[in-house]
Length: 557
Image 1 (cartoon, rainbow, N blue to C red):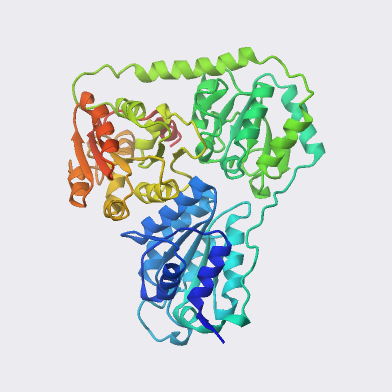
Image 2 (cartoon, rainbow, N blue to C red):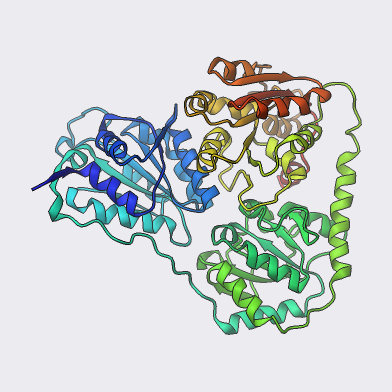
C-alpha cells in the first residue's frame, strides 16, 4: 500500500479547489506542504514577512474574485498574519489561511512556538477556524474551508495544522479527495421583491445606484451597466466596486463620498438602489450627508444582517447582486423609463464643480509638489490597463479624485479596517495573479515603512511593480488631525524624516529615483515602467493640503 503525508493530502485537496498559487513563509511545521507543492508544481511566493504574505493572498483574491491562500508557521508566524486575517474579515475577502502548530503530542510541554490557542485567537475574525486532529480528515476539512471562504458572503477561514498531523503517514487508498470542492449556485430574488424595487425606481425623481463589494465579488458589472443604461439612473461606487462602471461612462457619478456634493447643492437622491453595499464608513454611516435619511432604500445583499443595520429599507432583497440585477433587467425590458436627462446633467455638473474646486491651488511652479498634481501626473503617465493599489492614510484619498477606473478590480485600496501598510503585500498578489498587466502601488511615506523589505520579494520573483511613495515627511492624517484638534504647536508622534526610500529599494536591486519637481514626475513614472524591474519613485509632496474625503471624515469628529 502507498503511504502519503498529511501535507500531501492538503495539497491534493487544494488542487481540487482550483488553487494555483500560494503565498507564505517557510517554517518547519509546514515542511511537508512545501515539499508537496514542489512535487505538484504549485508555486509559493515567499515574502519577507508573514503579514505581506497574507496581504498578497488578499490581493490575489480581490483581483481574481477567487480563493487566495496564505501559509504561516506557528507562534510568531501566526501572530504576524493576524492583521491580514482581520482585514480580510471586514472586507469579505475569500482567503484560506493555513497555519502550522506544535504537534498534538507536545501539548502543554512548553515546546517551541507553542502555548497559543491559534484557533481561539482568530475565531472572532474569521468565518470559520478549526484545528485538525486526525490526518485522514484533512481532505474533508480543507475542502470545507475552501468552500466556506468562497461562499457568499465570502471571507477568511483558518485551518490550524499540527506538525504531527502534517507529517503523519496515511494509506492513500483509505482517504478520498473530494471531486467537487467549491459551490457555484447563487441565491435568487423573488419576483415580488424585484417588481417592488422596479416600482419604486420608476416613480423616483432623483434615483441613484450605489454598487458595493457584493456587486464586485458577484461579477455584476455587465448587469449593472445594462440596468443603469436602460433606466438612466446614475451610479456611484463603494471601494471594491470601482470600475464596475467605467469612470468615463456618462452615468458614473464617482465614489460614494462624492454623493455629498449632491446634498450640499440641495439635490438629494430620493430613491437609492444599493447593490451589494455594506452601509458604514464609505457612506458616512448614519450621517445624513451622503445617504439622506429621507431616501427610500432598495437594498440587495447576500447577508441579511446588513439589511437595516444602519438604514431602514423600503425593499430588502437577500440575494446575489448579479442574479438580482439580471432579474431586474429581464422584468423591466418592456418598461418605459422616465426621461432622466436633467438629473443626469445635475450629477455630471456636480463632478465638474468638484474638479474646479480641486484645481484652484494647483497653479504652482515651485516645489513642493501638490499631492493632487502628483496623482494627476501618475494617472497621465501609466500604461493603459494598469492596476493601481492605493495605500496610506491620505495618499489614496488623493488618488480617488483622479483615478480612471476602466475595468473591475483596476483600483484596489483600503476597506473597513483601514490597514495602513498593506499596499506592497497587496500589490504582490495582484501582480502574481496578472503577470501580463502592469501594477502601480501608491503609498505614503509612513505606510511604505511597514513592509519595505518586500522590494526584495519583488526582485527575487521578478515582479515589475512600480511603487510611488508620496513623501511629506509625516504621518499626514494623524498630523492634520492633531493640528485641527490639539493645535499646530501640539504635534507628537506624527513627524517623519525625509528618508531615501528609493535608495532602500535600489539596495534590494530595484530601480529607484527621487523626484522633487513637477516636471520630473511624468518622465520618472515612464522610466520606472520602462526599466522592466520593480521600481520605487520617491516623490516630495506638500504636507499642507488635506484631501476632501479626509476633511469630510474629520468634520465628523
